[in-house]
Image 1 (cartoon, rainbow, N blue to C red):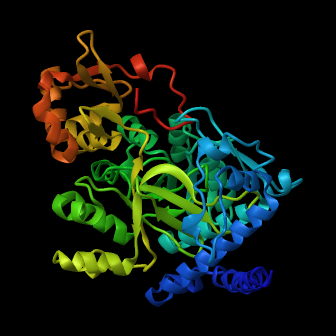
Image 2 (image 1 turned 30 degrees about the horizontal axis):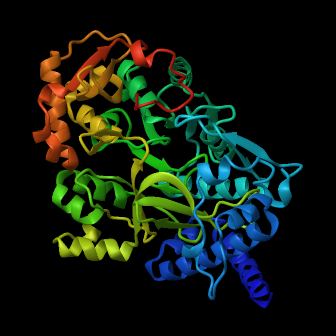
Image 3 (image 1 turned 135 degrees about the vertical axis):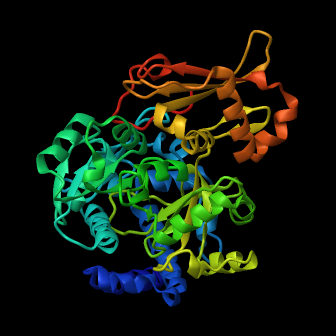
Length: 494
């Protein structure tokens, strides 16, 4: 009991301090100082402990979950000893009400978000007024830190309605600029840019595939506009970023999930510089992150999130906020990745002859989160795992393909002779008027690309003939791409 009183009293004082620091971007910058990072990590763990105590005492689902997982407290509390939440063992086992504190949805100020359902049936998530206000404050601070000026027109092209990202972006940023919520509608985006003209500065938000489709097919001369871009929902390759930077002055990705919340991490000058370095130097990339292909890289505040990596290389997220409607403690998104402190990254780069100071002029000392993508969204092929990001990297690195291919899907199957085959479905852009290489040439491009970027694929190539890799081309919106819902993320696994 005394421990709980001390924890809550300490957190109340820290909440007041954090509230003051978060008033303005200049005071918030204090948190990114290197000397404060160990302290922020310790406070973050203290908040995680308090969230655990509250969940165990007041959340019916979590109390039952601990019993089902045979959890027993022994000695000093440790987050690592707490059972891991997943959709399978927690979200799908308990009702929405059971997963809320006190077994009920708060009576007012609540927003219910829905996941896109891109990996199965959609799930629903309850957000309290307090946690939405907290997310809003951090989003606004990040916006001010990155873009500084006022008067920017914010064009929100994320899916609207029950989906988490679009509505949260609109609710959070309406106070910092001129906001228009468009949704993923290319015609409305074109009409808006025409209506306001090139004299304004625009910040566009959207899913990478939608933005790519827009820049590839729009009738507007985008070079006449001052455009910046924030993408989310899925990662982007450096090839795709380079393609988008032909039209946008900046292109930054944000990391989040409807299961947790948006904007957990954000790309910075440091992480973009590091990713570009790793894209060029694959030996360095493997030494830093265990793979030759560069992951998405973000920075996050350890005061708000405790992020761990389990033995399978999956990320576990704990949100320490005390005012959430429902607890999220060691939640496994099935995203593969890990974390590094700024100091650890600097030391590892120095061992390979690089100076972290040379990657970016301005650097926050917040920890680095690296993400390879959803671990359960791969296709197996002769023991190798082929990732959608591998195919995206190949397309984005080829000037012809990046301008002519809208999307793709991967399928691993057995033919009539029970031989394993890997098929890549390619969807051409809308109003396709160009010409793609012949199928055998495309097979060579993707075979060489997969061998180059995927070490496991390269190792198993001696086990099969190149004809085991098949390419199939589809006109826009046909074949496996027919009936696509533009409001949700693309499906890359067939």
